[in-house]
Length: 259
Image (cartoon, rainbow, N blue to C red; front, side, top):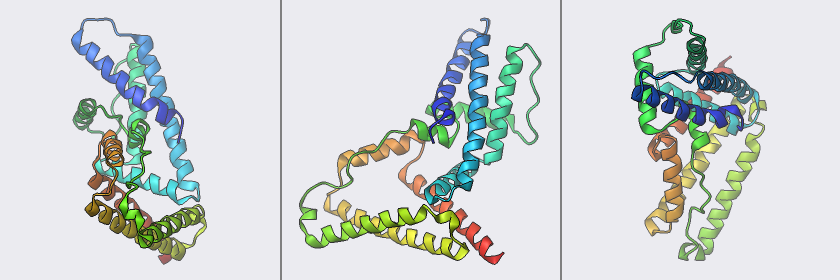
């Protein structure tokens, strides 16, 4: 997912915030037209790559790519938007900046666009220090590289070690199987989603037991919390969005099966 959408969107959000702050602090100042043109170009390129990336992700067979796409769909829906409306707004904002730089009158908003809602969203993004898309937020997200469990007494038990190794092995096997998800028929996709839920439930139980034992790695928890905060989410919201994404995939498979 590397590219303009990831690299430029966070920078664009920061640059727009600086530009607006400068305009507020010095309303009589001369706008930096070259800077505005550069921002418009960055946004236009990011929007183009946004569309290309969404198209690629919808066509690949790999489950994780499709899952991520559905998470973006669920996330944008929570913002009261759709993937199409996000692209329309990005194009309009880029065209607006270019019109301003050229001394032309403001362009009318696209049909159905609520300018007051847009202004509130932008204000909230500035206050939260967020980019204006889940793609941008993931690009700016903190990494998680600490192991989840402490290397302590819990793993002294052969039963615990065997369960952990089996869970890791089953999860890895499911990831490999998911690389061909797009080639499955509807029944196969539904079966895969059921297997995935079963593995997730097993991880939840395993993780909860280690939490009760006080055997979770504090560094892992801190990194996970920071990762989610950098995306503007908490653990519960992330789980909800993931659940919604899987629900969308299940609904698609059911529709395919009925057809």
